[in-house]
Length: 54
Image (cartoon, rainbow, N blue to C red; front, side, top):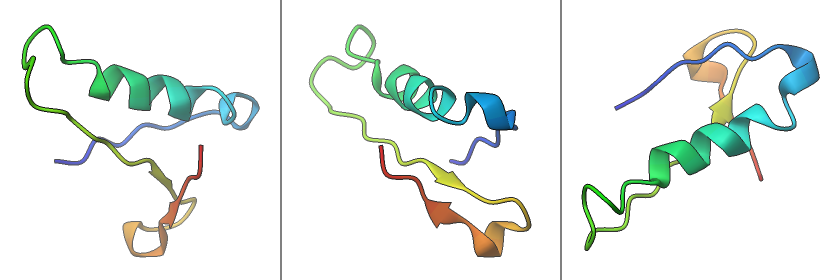
């Protein structure tokens, strides 16, 4: 599954970390299965997306 979020340039240092934490915080719903998410970014097309290292 992919979720696309537009982030203003001034929030690029905080929003990706917050989104990653929110997506991985499912221990109350799925307590025994770890959920891992990745963050990638692009300013052009999905084919040009790059990994975001947090």
